[in-house]
Length: 165
Image (tube, rainbow, N blue to C red; front, top):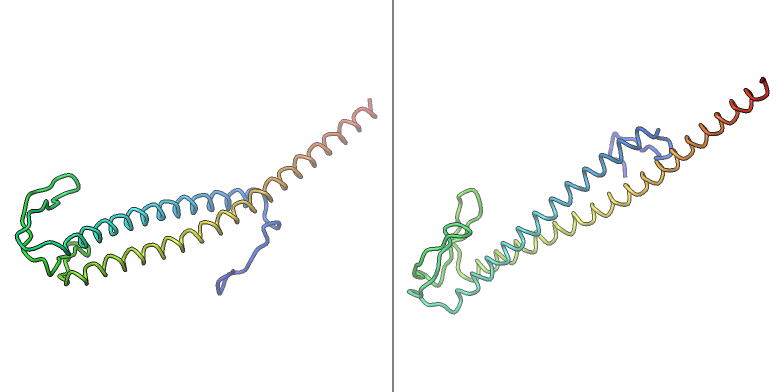
């Protein structure tokens, strides 16, 4: 679909060089979408794991021993101070205190949002892949037609020079 102010151009009206450029652009867009999809999957998995960790606190009582992550690979021993509320890292150094049920709900909503976004990216990837296949097919047809025309021209020149000799 063309956006306002843009006109649609038939792929068959484009020159092979333009089709080649369009092919490269579509390939780059597909690579970008694949990277975005991968990042969203990683974020969804991280939120899912965090949600499971918060759910695991439901049966805990204050004073229960636990390991607290400082980094992805470094943990320190600690004790659960409050079994009713959780502190959630919402990004860029901001934290949100929520009741335990609210924390569980937060992570479930975030995972669902990311799944919805991932589904949209998958649709876009599918559309771009179809467009890429169409461009490649038309490009192959145009290149084959150009080669056929060059062979025909060469055969005509060879026949004309053979007649002159």
